[in-house]
Length: 310
Length: 162
Image 1: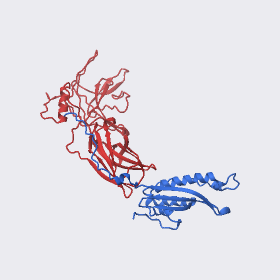
Image 2: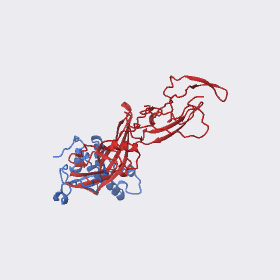
Image 3: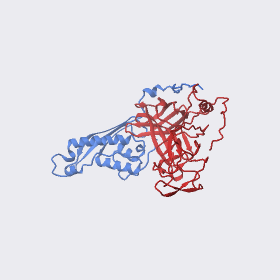
Image 4: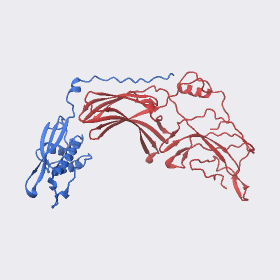
């Protein structure tokens, strides 16, 4: 009987790190047959992998972090028991992301290795990456148009916005020779997966917000005030683990009386702001948030965990 | 750091010139298709329509013009625009060949209701097309709208604003 034969779905794939070098031993199974199994001794480590799963390329998993802890020695379990574990100060470099063609997940997996087949249980966790206010955050200001027909100057107050921020801007009309019916601003999310000739972009309109109804004339300014907290947004992700990117664009769209659309797309950077540190937070979380919010004198962590594998 | 309230005040804007605010808009363009008239006798009859244009757009040489066109002139214009420009040209009202067959109960292509429906369709077509920034660059459009007759042997070219 195969050590790995337990009929679970394809996205949970337990692979032993030393599958190629580990010895096998024959062992009689319950139905009298003799099969070969991977041989483990007392105190040995069983280690496996944490996965990134690409939907279009199922089975192609990429690890970026993997930590293993032994919780109990080989032996018999005669009654229900509870085992403590702790992975101290685990590096979690990327934010959890579930998209159209790619998924990045962090999870804990507890595995009980048995003679015939393992029992395993997974617990997904979510990781957020935090940033602070960028030092440089220039406004975006540009003049665009169609020669002799439509000239506008648009301005957005920043180029980098946090997820609960407000986009403040304006559209100034320099020349209007077409009959405009209304104007809107859209937030577009573009998820890019794959490399080289297999790059694939998935565009998704997250928001549509009408900022003007009616025909403007030269010299008019139309204000923009768009609150981001109401929309499902993630931080901008650039070339995560060289596997995927998630970028955001503001799309300014003018529609004329014959339903023709004139648009200008502009990329913005989104980042996640940390919350205020509250007194009731755990010690570790307090250290973590201090590190992100840039206070002086962050405390050192209490002990280095020597058992930690990387 | 404290949770700062975002500054949502409007950006600074220049006050608008009052002439711009209350003067005529720069996008005035009106096109009417009207006054259908049937000319000729017997089997050589056909219907013409008046195409009237009023505008202040600099791309049009005449700020007011009036010409007479027949259905096949509209067909010519549509074909020219499709070939010469990148515009997705809207459809014309139907050709109605079946109305030209004999032994009909009504007046065929000279039926009043049919002419009115066609007139509306032609007007919609011209308004859609004449307001298109790319179509406005085509010589064929300007010839159709503002010259006395359509020269089918013309040389296609792009118009640039004077």
